[in-house]
Image 1 (cartoon, one colour):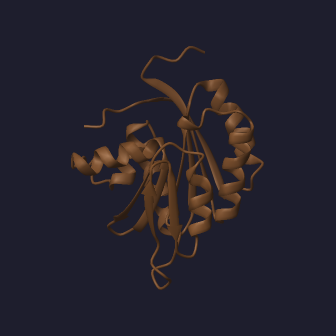
Image 2: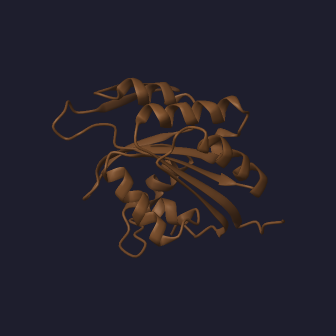
Length: 182
């Protein structure tokens, strides 16, 4: 099937445990995927625990907090990241393609139908609003999202790899249309 330039498929896997999400990302990277088409999203800690933070020096990044090693180990696999606090959800880390969209949403005060910056970023790559709300709830409940977007064959292959990594749920959104980020 030939997709239009503004259309693609998207896969979103929800993981209950950070180790499963990390294993999935490493499998994808090891399988030769273009990691610019992938993102990982998660909170990384509970509010009663040590505050998590990070600093960036060039391409290197240092994290601290309960899951600092988790986020630090994944940083090198992705191109860009952002740490922000989203009302109701709390502190969230986004690595990969969605990070730039989240930053654009925050800088441009893009709010799509009452969605958070994370929700607006997911919606902008074509994820349906009802699914966006489900994914925001998963992150709020300390879950981790691995998000992929691209051609039909690539997404079918990535879905198969993600399914082998013990996701709590996985969805393939076919023929989604990219929405303008502003």
